[in-house]
Amino acid sequence: MGIIFKIAWRNIFRHKGKSFIIGVILFLGSFIMTAGNGVLSGMNKGLQENIVNRFTGDIVLIATNQRDEAVVGGWSLTPTEVISGYTNIKAILLKQPYIESFLPVCRGFSMILNEAGDMGFSGLLGVDIDDYQRMFQSNLVLVEGRMLSSTERGVLVTAGARKAIYNSMEMWLTPVDSPFILSNLSPEAMSNSNSLNIQSNMVLMGMSADGNQLDIRVPVVGIAKYKYLDSIWQGYSILDLESFRECFGYVTAQDTEIKISEEKERILKEEENLDSLFEDENIFQKVETKTSAYQIGKIKPKRVAISTNMDRDAGIYNIVFVKLKRGYKLKDALLKLNIELSNSEASAKAISWKKAAGSIGDMVSFIKVILIVFVTLLFLVAAIIITNTLSMSAIERTTEIGMMRAVGADKSFVAKMFASETAILSFFFGGLGMVIGAIVLPLISWLKIPAGTNDFLLLVFGGDYFNPILDTGDIIAGILILAFVTVLAMLYPVIVATRITPLEAIARD
Image: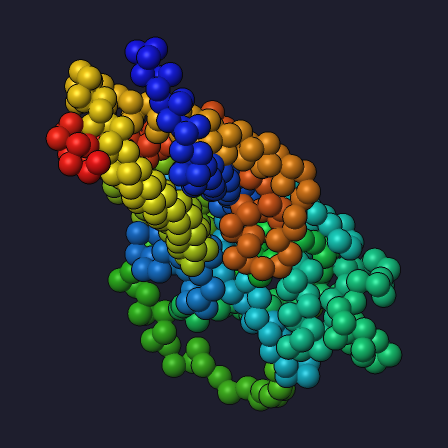
């Protein structure tokens, strides 16, 4: 075997030009492959960290009759179907060993009204703010005002939503009892700073399917932004649960605590006697009524504190975010959870975060496919070029190979010689490409190249900054792919070389 490697080394240096061309192709291919794997790994880790861990969880529960599954990343104004019987669903979730944590929320779109008749729109998440921050690693950070408390009514408006509201309604929102900060004005608001309409509360009207929504006025407690991927999630402001339920006409936790007297309960149970209540002609009498126009300005915010003893789970939710424990596969968890929900006849189904994210999840999958296809095509092209170069080299070395055959070298010896030459080039140049790639990727991460507000770049980067990483799995995969391409590229040249006979060498001379 040693003599074969010696001859292979001699041939590489004897044919420096072709060897260098093959080496450069292998170097570029392995370098780009390493970089591509690093980008994919960084993207996966970034998306796991910034979307799954900080906004959606691994699994999202929605109502079984919810048609549009893009309940998080989809921006359709169609109301989200409610999940009934959450207390039973909660009991199911608590029993699953693969679930780390979960959070029920209300999600919907609301109209924003003002006295001038202008109208705006905003996405809303009704949450228990303490549970939300705990579940999603304090992803909400303050810009102005203070953080919403779980025992009060109010709204945390995102900085992006505030800007959009001003553009549509010329109304600039500032938190209650907070100083006005001129430097936080958007360019559009700054140009109109002398006559700025400043408000510290909002009139919201939920967009409900059954028409039971109400107009409510809520104080703006603070202006916030999402720590990661804010330009994607900024359409969702945070509203306290009870205000959300009232706004959308849902059953609130407070409604479930209303006690009906024994006498009223007895009357309601007597279904046969209900009609007799209205038989008396004297129950109706004429009264004078005064009509007054509906005025938004007269809607007052509710200042009633939310009771800490109230069972929030007794009210309505329409989404449940679920996080899995490490080591559990999403596909298996989805299958098991849906079986449990179906067996319990729960009015909910489990979907992956990518489905719930809608176009965002689709774009993530599309980007991954593009990167994988690009790297695959690159190596196929590299394999074709290397194959052609090695084949030409074999034909040009007909005399040399023929003479070797004439002095006793068999076909296997010639095949091993060509395989050794290709393996040496692949090991040196391909390995060099992987090493350079492994050195360059941390340097790129250190530069902290920002994605800005470009949604595509935010998803490619997996976050606000370009952070490619290379783990052990990527290195092993790179070595295997490089070995596969090397074997694929040398198959045909080896066949060409082994078919050369001493007679062909003599005939060529």
